[in-house]
Amino acid sequence: MAGTLILGTGLAGYNVARELRKHDTSTPLTLITQDDGEYYTKPMLSNALTQGKTAESLVQQSAQDMARELDADIRARTTVASLDTRARKLCLESGESLEFDSLVLAVGASPIEFSYEGDGAGDIMTVNSLADYARFRRTLEGVDRVALIGPGLIGCEFANDISGSGRQVEVIGPDAYPLGRLVPEAAGRALQRGLEQSGITFHLETVVTRVDREGDGYCLHLKNGDRIRAGAVLSAIGLRPRTALAEAAGLEVNRGIVVDRHLITSAEGIHALGDCAEVEGQVLPYVMPIMQAAPALGRTLAGEPTAVSYPAMPVRVKTPSHPVVVSPVSPDARGQWSVEEVGEGVKALFHDEQGKLLGFALTGREATREHQALTRQLPSIL
Image (cartoon, rainbow, N blue to C red; front, side):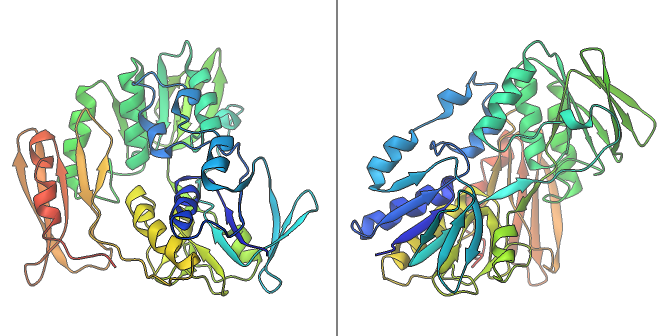
């Protein structure tokens, strides 16, 4: 019996495996990963410095422990070369082929990277795995100033964390204010003020054009003519769903791997969830959608077809210097924001033309206390 293959051992892959085993303890299960297969929570990477966490201390279970828990074969440090959807077969770079009855693509997303001029451009770091974090932490030893490219959600979280570790942070980006794609201007400005009070400096409405090595550090040239000197450079400009394998196999791909509410791709027996998936037109690269999707897919894989449902799922931005909770508004939503100052932050509510609450952005300790009451007023996402 070929059994079930799960490609990826992040939160999506491991949680689906756990959910499957709740309903089916006998089907052969194999998980394949390019990394070492250790179980950890990736969102912790952006607030681990302040907590003094090493890469090793972030690991919650080893691959061997997970294999025993799941009664599964975990193939670590393994790369997939191709997927044959008709033959239901994965071909590995080693030359080995693995057949499957069901396949789950839980391959996540990759950091978006830009090319810059200068001999220091190749030293720009991204943090999207334990190995990345370990390298990042080593690089920061002896560094007192970090240049961070990207004032979005991940960028702000890392900025707050690096600042909390006692280092100066210079945040650079083309946006007019932080979290520009998620919140209205008043909320973004409030977050900016809060982070600036903790010592973070913003260079907004400009971009990096060149990164040169300079002594033990780097000189970043900005489009507005400014220059920033730093001992390390981190890029946190967003993530892009990993779709190359699916696209090469002929699966339908749009912004992510296209799936229906049963998380089935355009090929029967092949599923996708997590940051790589586009569920009914929505790409939601957050933890809560994974935690909603994994139980449904676990039942489906066990022979009990179950559609995923998404309730309202606000996102908590890990910026303790100025807390933020946001329930993003769909880009095609019709309505308007109302904003009021609450303490050191703001309460921004988005209502449609009939007065129905569709989203919110709460910043500061006082305003964010209202997130649960407001969440109960929101419609389900799916």
